Image (cartoon, rainbow, N blue to C red):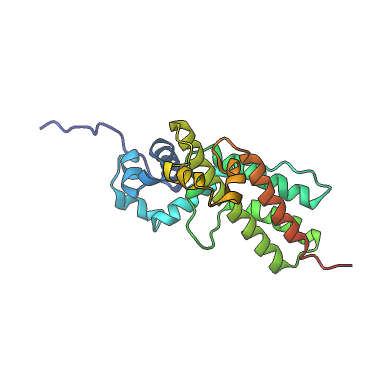
Length: 220
């Protein structure tokens, strides 16, 4: 009897191989298709084999997010902490938007990884040197990070609607505005149009956050 070789050679699994396979799956099918079974199929193994390296899908997603942050290096001014925080947020936003569904990877709660921790350390150092207490610096970092990630998710969806030609304003909304019952909303409607000043809206919110952080610094 002649034995058959498998059609694809099975790799010797390691955490790095699993994360790299997950990155390929995410890029190809997005977060909805990122399952343990799909990653296992990418590696030509059974899904239970992945649990030797990652106890849950959440754990794999955190490791994948950390992996995809490895090539993000913040370019800072170094003279004004407010400018540095502004630059970090803008650079993180661009990085998240450059890769499919990366901003959707992280579960709620506290998570760690070597790249995540290095970036957090840099941000905390900037905030604490500016005068924020350790607790306020942690809260400020968390609040700012949540803002950028949530924005990136929404902006990615906005871009997807743009690609289909859908402007985000359905017939019902337009009909309601046409009644004249919402004059103030009608005046600012252009701010909500797809193709509007998305960069300006993001910068506005970011500047509001930074101004709020500044109020936490004790007056001298």
